[in-house]
Length: 332
Image (cartoon, rainbow, N blue to C red):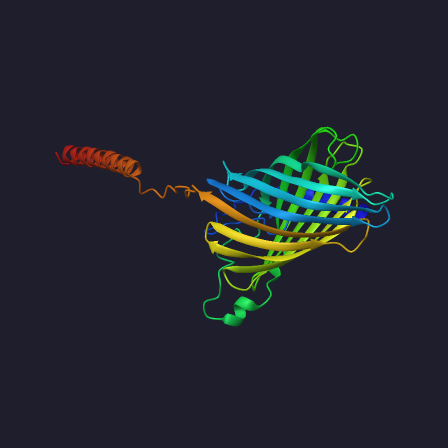
């Protein structure tokens, strides 16, 4: 744990440099996993990501079972800078918990938000900003498939947000209510052959008695421009709850602004066991406009140039006339 926390601190120190992110022609979704990519959606983009999942848990030592369903959502908005993104994230769950420790099972219905967070993410380092260096080799198939050392350098983003937890929430630790901060460092490596690796290091509900540390590692691979598969591991460590959850699934790009996805999630312990099936979709409203580059060809700039040119011509003509008069005076 100390090593991970130290690495987390080092990544924060490493990230203080400004870069240029790029708008993508197709949707850039955080789904189907739960990790957040380092890149933002781009300015002028309003993106919606949502899904539904089943809930199935069984705690063997404490003899209780949980069955139900949940909904998760994210609204992402790129504004001001290409590197900046604001987001609203939430996970709502409705389930029945059955206590089998007594002779007669006792069932109780629960429902609330497990997470409800407003935050902002900023891309602070982008190794792919030099598009010339990352252009494909049009003359060599092998050259485009070989490993590039440059890909080991990840893009890095920093996320800062605020959680809101209601009083007596059955999904949070006792005493946690109101607002609490969350910070995250997200890194992303894009490798040749359609492989992408994302890592999130998260410190959640900072300042509470049950603040937790999480890591999420996600590896995706695109077989075609439409089909993507992924594998993910999520570790959670706190005094209230600890787990290591595995996820596998895939996504299909229906069109450039719309994506469908599905995945399964499970763990390998019985305190409790976890097994979820999830389906989701991502859709974006694309109002992005490329920034206008003033290359000196505007009408205003052209007018200024003509004005300067005419002024210089008048000066030269006046100077030539004066010189000619001086020569005439000298000859006489």
